[in-house]
Image (cartoon, rainbow, N blue to C red; front, side, top):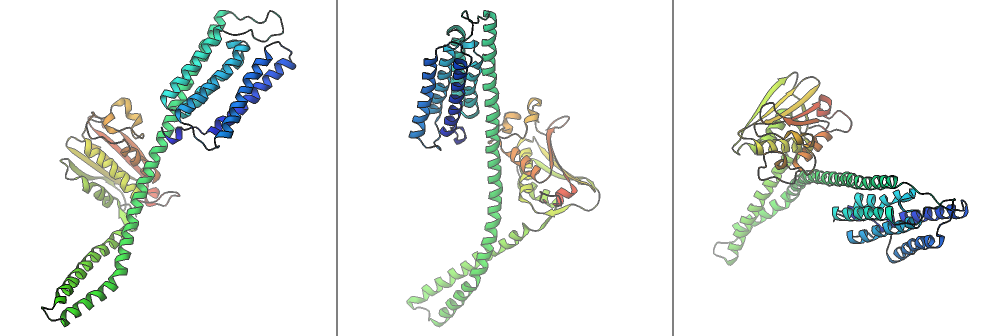
Length: 428
């Protein structure tokens, strides 16, 4: 069970205090302002039961305590039984306050797993059914009371039950999608943090190589002088030779680390559109799929912008997805004019089923669910991460099917957004 699905006990206690206040106010108003007869003592006994439960829970647990699904089931079940008892004493389903039986089901739908939601909803439906047939008379000023036709009571039952079921299903679906979106956005943030950490490590390695270079050169120089001054055959000469060899090995390692400085600086360098495409395409050229890059239109100078790991990762994810599902070829088309910059990735695979085209790019919808059930699918975050990263860079992303066969992903920036001139965006 996710932490986001664990209800805070303090929240339920506050809601129950509101319920207690409302129930007590209604009972007092009907009994001593309207002077309508009903069993006052049992009603206030049920209200006192809620007060006692609240005081017990508040004294036993801290306000930040989160309930397990079983504990939430028990507490929400009480929140159905207690008002159902009040309603049974005051007219049953004919009492307008019957609608409050929906509240526990709504709370469960928004926070609990499916089994708990189904149990609470089923219990609320059962309570409503019992109240439709078993109850005391509705409080009323005339001695004979108010008697509603059985057909009207049946209509009330049907309306409440259908509202219960519809609200439970609808709210559960909305809450589940919200949790899924939040989890997927967290995964996207982790991808970006990883890219930033790798860039920081490159710079740190280059700085370490620079700082260690001078003392290591001194050590190597001293070791060589000792090697020349100690005659061969002496017991220490082998140790000195080993010291020279290892110092030289350290210098080679530092030289390789120093080469990372150019890589580190490249993260701040300018990158042209075609250079960006070549960089994301190169890792996917040797997988049995022909990968071509084409310039479809060019008007003016080629777009150049600062390197952005988010854009590189986003375009790279789309290219990788196309290569994974292409039959034989993937084409990356690029173009630009005075106002726009665009990239299109086309493959000759099976494409997407029409029924799911509107959901392509949603989190946790793996492409194996939408293409021809090929093996090797992941968590369904690749396209979602790609679309999210590219949209944050100012791009409009559209994914669909080609007219005859295959899929197409279109990425379009305004010229200013691609170059990083617009507020809130960084260039690619």
